[in-house]
Length: 154
Image (cartoon, rainbow, N blue to C red; front, side):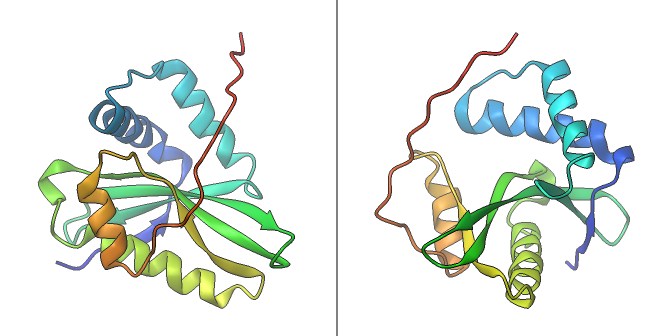
């Protein structure tokens, strides 16, 4: 099946909230605060330099999947990594090429950006299905481990 890839618009915010909420539950068994999630998604529309969402629609106009892109400057490479985040494919559209369509769209746009030095993403250690998909797309596992210090904001 062919998928049309488009930038998300504000009218997609509720859909993106549903997708992100479902993805957090499925991949990490993590419940997200819906109001905070909606505010975070909406805020990105006001901060295009920080990133944006892409939507994959099927031939009937049904939204099949989405992802978020953010950016990180690399001084070592004098270039910008594009980070693929918040990937979600609706269950009825899985294993039908939705992520492939999204990834190829991102890869083509990234290669056309003279400042882009590569694509990155992170994946849960136990999510072997997603890991196999990313390997099939030509990505490789790095030797880095991700560490964080999360701040609780009120």
